Length: 450
Image 1 (cartoon, helix red, strand yellow):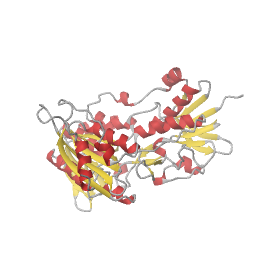
Image 2 (cartoon, rainbow, N blue to C red):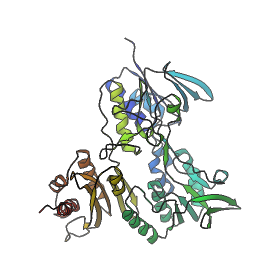
Image 3 (tube, rainbow, N blue to C red):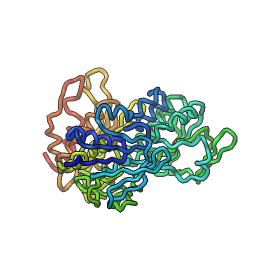
């Protein structure tokens, strides 16, 4: 019997997780990965910290070389190879490598083409060498060089990457102006949470321009002129960090159905509508664990797990991917800000009757030296009494608590399940009434429990 040929487009987290799983379980299989870059599994989430100098060497974000992947895992990586067409009938992928057209045949194909940063269609932005779109590791060195000699820097986008970059530039002593088209930064959060974030930014000297999209950029001598509907601003450099989009064009051209936000539509086994073609990672949609609806929430953790599951299913294991809770966290100066599940607006849109409580508490016993304050919002459904989501801000203890809620959401836990969760207690680590348990107690009171 001939060896089955597994072909993967994309050497990012999903693609390499799938390739590694296939090789681990079936070492004699033929696994080839087509990757545009000269390295695999790079880490764009670390770019803000490279720009701020916390990560001095850009190469640490560039993943693993194809030679090392081949020697350690037996996976053939065709680097510098851009896939341009999938022919499902002949089971062939056409690509460009070193300027030459080539082709690769497959028995089973995984589309793991990931996502790309969105470039705003702003007049004049493409003509300036002082405007940068965050997302591509290989372009970060040039951006850092310009930012280091800049004093006044604008950032378009108040999401995760935009805020992380804002912090790093402020720490370098730069004057930062943040432009956000929406009413608040961090749109995945409830407005009250976003307002807390905005107060922190203002206290650090960040000039916020909310509901003020940039419309035009002009280069005048050694400065940038940024124009909005309200005013014009003079800057030394501009960073665009307005999110990402799925790289689904090659899939769509092959007849693969697209779903939410032009991401690839898949079933629970991560199969597309075309036989023998799977998809995983940032390029495709996934089920939201809480709402049960298809969503597109591109996260590195989700991409790795989707790749793992796709690799199993390409070998015939038939393992359903359960979905995502959208759990995310980011650092903002001395604080950690995190969310999981649904916020109030999302919960209402999903058909729930959400109720919530806000808890201001502390991270350790109140008498133990060094305790920090912590704020959390817990959201539940009035009818089913199930937990729906949480948002937490604090100087410590945020990651562990948001992960606790995320785990409970995966198990469809109720308010009572949270209340009776046997969380640890010792004065150096947590108060006897943990903020999570307090939130459950207050929710129970809202619902009429004694």
